[in-house]
Structures are given as structure tokens and as C-alpha cells.
Length: 245
Ligand code: 6PG
Image (cartoon, rainbow, N blue to C red; front, side):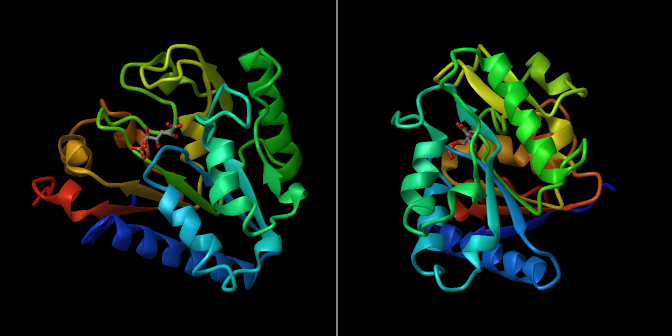
């Protein structure tokens, strides 16, 4: 299903983080009205941090958080207390302030010293939780680099072509640190709802190429859920000039 992405232009990063957080709350409550839990896969980086902080503050009373299960789309292969850790960023911004039960926090292991073994273990965790060979996340938050990368899938990387794995190790990320774990495109594209958060004029060119939908080269262009929706939450400074029309 090649669904038409929905684009939401927000005046500034503050408006973007609030709108994305409100969308999360709406989706979570809709899902939890019919299902026991709400599964989310979160990205790291700078852009989504404010959204996570808002969820744990302004929206802390608006979701049954004990029924939300959190996974990571990708993770830098550093200790979980390292400043570059996506786990640490989400834990500081959201998990600890919300006192999310440890059983709801599904972080990949990055301490074994063996990224491939860690990737396999994370795959096993996913399959144990979802009970299926292709987990479908209710809500996946993706960022995008100014080179059009998503997760830790970078332009021209062989990792973009992997179709027989859910999670793989990456040893040569052009965005430091070089060693990472990342969900693959088949797992990303199995999500029920994908939400991109893109902010900053430096991402304008990549955003324009992706939204023009003429160029499959960029990893973000390869995010086309088979049976799901795609929402783009973009700041006006990233959008100006990116408009495909
Ligand atoms: C990571 C992220 C990565 C990020 C983009 C955008 O681990 O670095 O998952 O994919 O989403 O690089 O990052 P910013 O939001 O910091 O621009």
C-alpha cells in the first residue's frame, strides 16, 4: 500500500514537538481503547528529545503509560549511560519521569562488545514480545539526517538492502559513533504508523527530494509502510523550499 504521506508544517521546533506529542497521545488512546498495549519504536538524535520531554510532562496524565511498551529504532553501540546513548536520552527525557515499568522498556544490549550478537538478541526480544516473525509497531518515530538517512541506515549502505533480518549491526556509520544497531527497512516498513520529525534549514534539500517522491536513493524515500500511514512533522524552516508543489 503506497499511502500518501500526510505533511504537517509547524511554525517552529516548539510547535513541532507539541504537535507530535499530541498526535502520539491521540494514537495511543485510540489503540488502547481496543488493545492491551501500545508499542512504540523511538529514534534518537536531537529532534525528538523535546517531544519525549513533553510526553512526560504536559501529557503525563493523558496516557495509560503502564500499557506502553518502548523499543528503539536504532542505538549507538555505547554504554547505556554514555552521553551518545539513545537509551540514555529517552530514559532521561521520558522513561524515568514517567516511571515506566522496567518490563515495558525494551532496549537493545550494547555492552556485550559484539554488535552482531546484540542485534541477534534484540531480534529475539522482538520476536518473543510480538510473537511473530515480522513485528508491527503501533507508532514509530523516525528522524532524518540532512543526507536523508533514517535510523542508522545511510545512503548507499548495504544495510539498506537487507531483507532477511529485523535488526543488524552497523560498523561504519558516517554519523558518529560508527558502530550502531539498527532496525532494517522491512521491520520499519511493517509499522502501522510512521511519524517523521524533521527540523532545521539544513534538512530542506533532503526533505524536498523525499517529498517529491521521485528519488529512491535516499533511505527516507525507502520508508513506505506496506500497510501503514506516514506523517511528516516538519518545522517551517525545514519546509520552506521543500514543498513539492
Ligand atoms: C541516531 C538517530 C538518527 C537520527 C537522525 C536525525 O541514532 O542518530 O536515530 O537516525 O534520527 O540522524 O538526528 P537529529 O534529530 O539529531 O537531526
